[in-house]
Image (cartoon, rainbow, N blue to C red; front, side, top):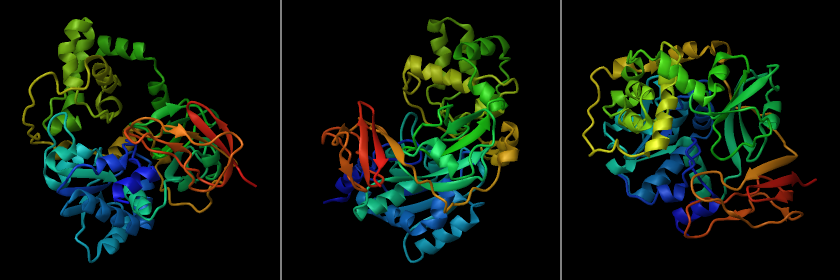
Length: 438
């Protein structure tokens, strides 16, 4: 069985949040494979913990990916501040052809387009992806899962950081399907009277109040904040109110554009132009909305740059939905990085201060007190592509690693597997629940 088939059967997907099936990602040739350990979301530490404690697996997965794509060069990219992780990686790559690239501490260092240019000096074309310039970028946890899959082990666990208003911030490896509530119980629970949960991070994550929401293959972490925190209040403002305040208050200062990482890389992304379009009819506004089509949704413009606390990122999101994610409806043009790009990078410490989360900015080391949930809920779709078809029925007994779904051979997707020995509780169109076998 070749590696791609092993990955397909093991259900390996991008663990950094994208969720693209890894077997499909390895279907293109590449000259360079980059292990992305930049991890730029404030308060999250799961990639650093993986590199520190599973460095050999990360490097092994990188070497497998290089072999599968024909790449001659492999690079592990991480921030220099992650000193223990860097030492572990350096030991793991000793004697191999893999290199290490130490990055400065800025946001969004983990954006793959930014990372490709920073690490190897190659410019991804407008509306393109790294393979267009011969580069494959994989999250470090994805590569560790790739190495495990090469040994026949499916994805049944996920490493996540639990941070913010919690008893003791930590990074844990939990069974897929563990609820937010059960995971937080292993770190001392919540320390906020009316908590909300940022799943995936404060900048690009999703806000929820559902403590029963399950951890999936793409969950990077959960940050807990009290509902009264300004970040929560901003995220919970209705979209119609976001547009109204933007239409009335934007003074076209350009800060959102001048600090935009994609603009500084030379792409046609100008959030201030999109904000200008809020004052026009939908037809006329399309001209201005086209300046948001290549936005990476990093959130800097909304949460850091705008002096009036407006919503340029959300305006760009709207433009992409309305106009379609294409290269600005014009012929591709060569991108030339801005001369002040390096000087305008946003340091993580400055972002933490602007977000008002300094009191929560603590280490989150890998914890040993892992949750032991009695029940897990497994979404049938946990990445890009189609959901798998259930292979089990209520009352069935399953063992650790047993496939619970199957994806048609001609469809893009990834199966899910049992994270422990259990009895199937329920099966519906979107989920399977498992009750731990006693």
